[in-house]
Structure formats: structure tokens, C-alpha cells
Length: 111
Image (cartoon, rainbow, N blue to C red; front, top):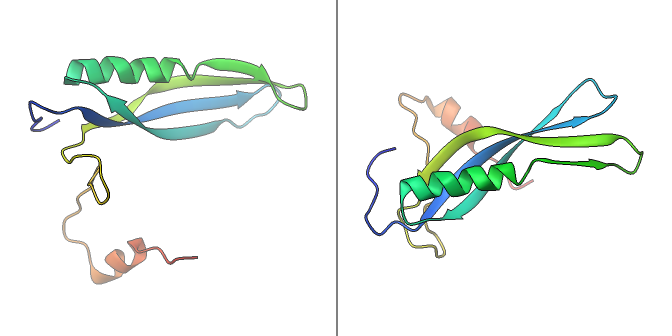
């Protein structure tokens, strides 16, 4: 993590949650993006871990199969630099040397 403003209050985190259904061979993995309110990087990390652990649940689905959701870890935890308002940048990614074709492939159509 790079520069963190002293007045940072908001963080964005990605939680990895694995879902297994008893009797099914394949799992399902969710990457949940959540907003975290914290006054320091340490507090943000601790609160993110708690949010993840809160995902650890088991229940029976409508077919009576046991479903187990298990928090596997944090894949991202970044400070949000902008105030939370319309147009605020929440996160970004960076690529170098992308061709025109690669750029166009990343653009999604309305449909």
C-alpha cells in the first residue's frame, strides 16, 4: 500500500468467499467488494477480517443440501483517497504498453 492520507476514513476491500454445496463436486467462489470505515490501516485490516469472518455460515438450501460459506482471505485492501460523492475514484488498475486492440477489448457495450 502506498501513501495513506492522515485523514483517511474509507477503504475498499475484496473478500474471497468459497461456497460449497454438499454432494456437489464444484465450488463457487465469490469476490465480494465491500466498503470499510476505519481511522487507520490497522483498523481497516481488522474490520475487513471481521467482515470476512462474518461470511462463515452454513445453512440448508431449498433442496435440503447443506451449503457452507467459508471466508478464505482478503485479496485487496486499499484506501479511498477521494471524498465519497458522485464521481469519486474508489480504485484503479494500471497497465503499461496496451495496444489499441487491447484497450477496445476492455470497453464494455451497454448491453
